[in-house]
Length: 242
Ligand SMILES: N[C@@H](CCC(=O)N[C@@H](CS)C(=O)NCC(=O)O)C(=O)O
Image 1 (cartoon, rainbow, N blue to C red):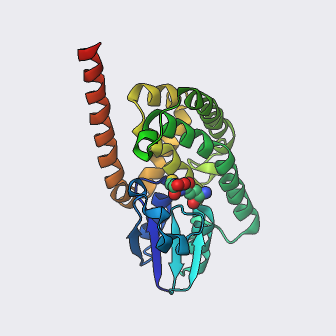
Image 2: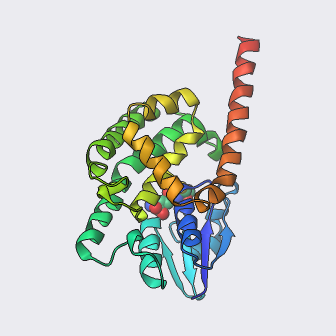
């Protein structure tokens, strides 16, 4: 199967898909769709993903799919030789992973996107920062992290659902939490510090997927440095004029 992945490495669901391909030796062509340049809104890309979002995939020039979780499930089942732990064939284990994936979209994803966008990224997309929306999103994010700590990580193993190896749910959720690297350090600490199990699980998941995890995050960390410098610049500007 000839696979194309349409992605922006600044996007957490894009990174999850790219890491999955790399970690499983799936050959693919990466087509970069730069969100900051509005490339996802072009008519060419709309033909690939009518929702105008990344990631999306194309298989053999004809089959197209969007939604990162659907993509991860598809890749895990359609490509040969994928290690069982990513998305087990056992329907009961699989259903639990699906449950974690669905839960992610209505909880931690909404919280994390809300915090990162409204405290940090909005100006990149021509929108103002919104402290009130950020505060509301932070509440949802904290409540979601508390649930990961108390429920999803309550089993014996180091990964979600007490598993001894990571699944596509670990990959998706950890890429989401990585997005908090972009916010101001104090805020990041305030959000993550109360959740020691979550922090350990993030580190365990990264470790289990190296070197692919770091490789796919290189551009993301460059973006983080740029944002940090811009923040410091804005801060010193405030001091001078204030
Ligand atoms: N539920 C989708 C979410 C995709 C998504 O929100 N992508 C963002 C980047 S992280 C995007 O393309 N945003 C551009 C836009 O909505 O205009 C998935 O998991 O694939």
